Length: 241
Image (tube, rainbow, N blue to C red; front, side, top):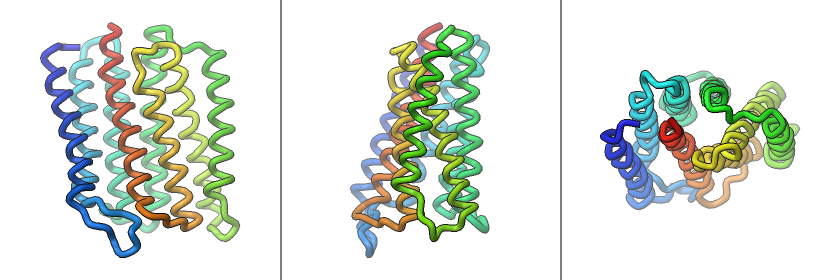
């Protein structure tokens, strides 16, 4: 990676961290005390991560890992759009279904990126990938059944959430497999796992209506820190060239 771009990347990461802190510090609790952050400032941190991902894509342009950095930049950009949908800043007839569809496209971009770096650097070990898939598919199924499933929910949406959870679990599994194969990608696996945890909490909130204190902040912070781990791994991958 071009050394001149690292200061830009670290500055963007610092702004991202400070923006999340400021969103919490400057906000006030809502009447139900399920959230307190300033919505516009909090959501802006998703855009900041997308910009950071494109910095890494620019750094990787013309190298053998360009597809890796490009895939993560596209995935994070799609995630930002999905965040706007989930926040109902982009109006859709069903914001939950619309958000799941766009997030699924983001996971597809991430998986494509993982395959690219895995093939180019010989990091995808079939046995490890299979074990990780089995473990995380089982975990995803358990999380859906214990935290999300409720008989009174619309069945199409409920089982759509199951499909989405298993797809997210697959993305997480491959991320963990890559991290086990190459520890220098140390933020990738934990970041994907946090993403999975965040969606399990969100599913519990949406489908079972569990509105415990500051649940929205728990959803957002596990999600956005997880996304930061995935995006930062994009730059770490370039150090392997």
